[in-house]
Image 1 (tube, rainbow, N blue to C red):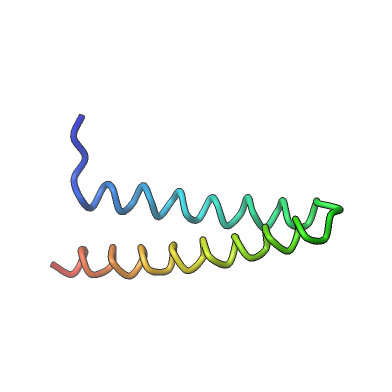
Image 2 (cartoon, rainbow, N blue to C red):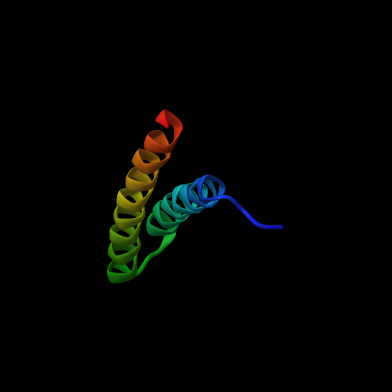
Length: 63
């Protein structure tokens, strides 16, 4: 099944949001400070990606 561009953006947005939740959860449950901080950083980076994808999706909805 071929996905439309909008469907792809929606899927990747959901993936990015899930990554944020996962990394945040992992960062709180890891004893190793370096790993915890790394996961926290990854959560923030995934959040930036999710925010950008959300903006793109909103533009698509306006069209």
